[in-house]
Length: 505
Image 1 (cartoon, helix red, strand yellow):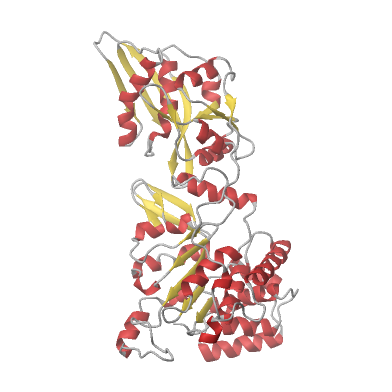
Image 2 (cartoon, rainbow, N blue to C red):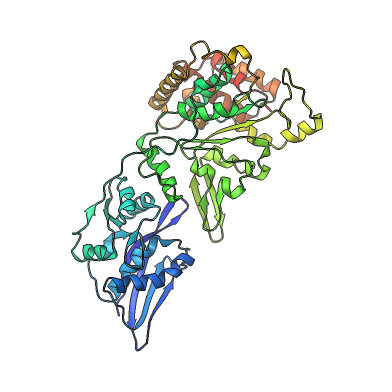
């Protein structure tokens, strides 16, 4: 008996973890072949034993009578999914004496194997490529679409195979017989119902706030009666953001791939997620068994829009506090912790009261004071404190609805200003958006002069602003200065930031 080893991966959230398959075949005087699988496999992997034996026999690899031992290393970590079928099959072929070759241990294999030996696509090709590069594997073999996804990552040679026999021949021939996988073209995800900003009539102040939010990556709250354009403004934000650079495109595609949402190539546009207010805690933050990314991770690199904010469960909203500040969420499960990326831009919308018409110029609010207070208390102060821009939208007038644009503030002009602000920010501080500047970064790019300090002291005195709110104002002022193509932040920029951080709700 001899032990052979092959290598595969198991998906954990948005990452792929290396799994070594140990295989040994013990011949015995038995009427059947017994397959023993250990190393904490899930139900999908346990079911693979039957199709594994069938696939081997269909391709001329008869195991004979005895026991086939298959062990997944590390044994103490739960393994998930059909992604390990191919390395399990190769381990069985080698342990039975049909295959030898150094590529068996020097390459990474992934793919689902059917009962006839056909290799099917699996999610996580890009995550597997990241793991291969991290662990020092130069070659990755999988089904064509999965290998094509893996080839998007530089430094990894990906090979596509349609059948188990083709992979066996490639190993036996020392790396000959398979075609290198071609990286697919960049694609745009399905349209996220994004709207042109010109469709929003009136609301000049809200459009200005939207431009500031887009320029600096700031969280934005829009409050107002029904029909004021809150949802349209939120959906217009995604069109103002610039196309992500290659590094971010890889990150976004990695998340989509691991979540079984691979769009067919590297994405070109940022994601836009708008979950319903009935979304569960696990649906928004992530979780389940096996742990799956939630909406905040699916919005990584893009926009997360929460409409009807007070209608979300309070515990679900409170879970946003850490991700908003750190750009990642940690899920603790039995025996392990899982860290998921979630650098998203938050936009939330709400009515001023349960009926929606409190403060309306023409409609009478039917809500009592206590009812309004209970409605607004569903949103905690600590969460509100993390939202940089808070605006109350009035109902647009009829003459505004009939006007195509606001004094030249068209979508094209606003988008051009945002692009210029992003270029200035990238030249100054790289990928870090203004909304994520720490204290040292703020002191470097937005130092306070005497007039600005007096303005902030007065604002703290009148509004009772927290230390977080003060730093938030400085970040917003830096974005306003970028929009105005100003090298330094002036007191006027700080005053504008203060006006955009209203007392809503």
